[in-house]
Amino acid sequence: MDSLLTAASIALSAGDALGALKRVALREDPPALALRGIAMAQLGDLPRAKDLLRRAARAFGAKEPLGRARCALAEAEVALASRDLAWPKKELASALRTLEAHGDRVNAVHARTLEIRRLLLTGEVVAAERALAEADLTGAPPMLLAIHQLLRAEVAMRRLRTRAARGALDEATKTAFAARIPQLVREIENMRTALQAPAARAIAEGRERTLLLEDVEALLASGSLVIDACRHAVLEAHIAVPLARRPVLFALARALGEAWPEDVPREVLAARAFGARKLDDSHRARLRVEMARLRTELAGLADARATKRGFALVPSRAKKVIVLAWPVEDEHARVLAILADGEAWSSSALALALSLSQRSVQRALSSLEEAGKVRSTGLARAKRWLAPSVTQFTTTLLLPAPPGVG
Image (cartoon, rainbow, N blue to C red; front, top):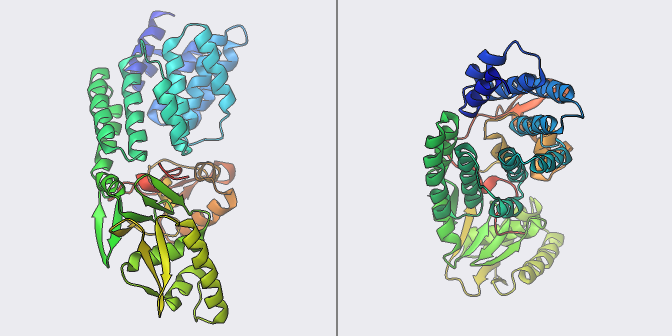
């Protein structure tokens, strides 16, 4: 590598994209094209970056597999930055094998880091945590060490381990300052801010209070019976009863939890669970059936006992019943939570991240756009969706594949 390419590489590793471009902006050889692509990605021009990286990969050709692998790695990073979650995983895996075979340990670690980031974006928290534990960071530069600590903090937040998250962020901050990359320092501070933002609401005995993430962690460890409306489950200590696929049962459980220790009239339960405007005999019969199913699901945790006017929730062991709800209730809260990262998402990427059909996501986006909560850019396949960053609360509990449930 000649002196200009070396200087451009050093500038890029320090986050100085403009400094790198000054050295290679007019060059068309494969290494220069690749460096230009990475620089454009750092400057935020992702379409131009992708084009340059693909040109570089073609120019390297089959006789230079290492150069092609590095281009594939950079293109994978651009794909993640542009939320192109459909970018083929096989290409990243192939690049990783090539990098390891040629002894490029630093870029191999980078490739594994990108795979962990993709796992987190698609909600595969357990797999991301496993990959982080298995990562070998020997010889990794400060930038990659800081990114790994940042990823550990994100996993810890998703798993509701706030002390571990703070420790990882402290380590990430030290390493990021050593790497002297301002963008990375800002990203770490943004995550630290999220730890101090409201994460949920607790509803108990007719009163509400706002919770930070550490308060949610303490609540789930308190032994109370928690009706978790963030993840549609009923929790007590280490026991979790997922009801995400049983919406009627969860609606009944939440209504009973919000009224505890009082009972709930049958009319109210039918309206909450079935959307009934007026209670009739068919609703009464269905309500009895669904309550029997709820008792079966909550066996050992609570009972749904009939009263003169309706039903009441009676915990088996817990002394309190608390409903855990989102900071802001919205029909399409999960979509808004993903868009709250400030990045531009396609409807297909949102569907993949949320495990929903693309048509369902498109309907949600249309409703949100009519309400002025999101906006779109581009047309057809280039169409992307954005929402203003939500700074008033952390969206950790709204993200897909939450910890401890399922």
